[in-house]
Length: 368
Ligand code: OSB
Ligand code: MG
Image 1: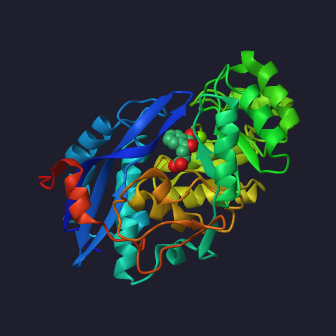
Image 2: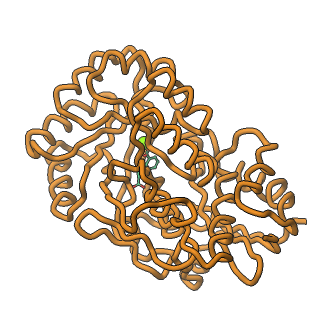
């Protein structure tokens, strides 16, 4: 199908809560949106890169420039038989998986709409609702952590992930486990520790966590493999897996026993599916992470989560947790810990353009 035109837009949305991780606190999100058009249809995506390189290296400014100057001019006016062909075209450029993902994901939406088919069916999904948990930011006290966990378990979330950092790890986890002896609990360090912290990380073993997410450096596999050999608790890799190749290396060297798969981090649905399949071949479960996406990114995540090896609850919690108003018209809400896949062709959600316009910082639609 021919990609006739595109629009790149930057929006800013206030978060309903302050989200603190080991790398900083966020009270709003700045999100690039991409629209691709062809055959009278539109496909949409969100970028997951942030203003500053605190999670991984990619930034909005860098991605915006690449999209405007290189990626979009390269694909506009051209015909791609399927999303894999488009991915191959952009593979000429190294890295920048988040920027590539934006283009590939918008094209998947457009392509699925041209086939009048829901995205999840084309991806090979096997379910029409997905299990979800919740990712909770660092709280001011152990008691506040326990209260917040209780609220979310009461809402039906099937797993609670707590953000930790050096100096704020054993205390909240011990309090959480004491208050909720049978809850599915996990922690996420966002790369805040090193092997010098092996003592505190092995001390977490006693709390029966389902996994410890990304304890060590964002670009490391070696040290994670060393740490995993010392831990009973599985390590879940997030930041370290940015491509099928990095996933293969991680799996071969036992750098972890679970993968947090984020379509926006790994270059799009095609690459995400490759990682999904590879992990499955190694007997390693994956689950769908999030980057505080609004409705378009959230819908993509939900569709991807229908693949068979997504066998743990994801972070794709209710849109109303994050936003007073979402950027899509359809409510993406969790009931009894399950998120229904939005029905209809493509990603199954429609942008609320009036609202999007009211939160837009800038727009570009000329890529010559
Ligand atoms: O490490 O999974 C992470 C949010 C922003 C950046 C990194 C991460 C997260 C989350 C929140 O954990 C997941 C979500 O609710 O979307
Ligand atoms: Mg993480």
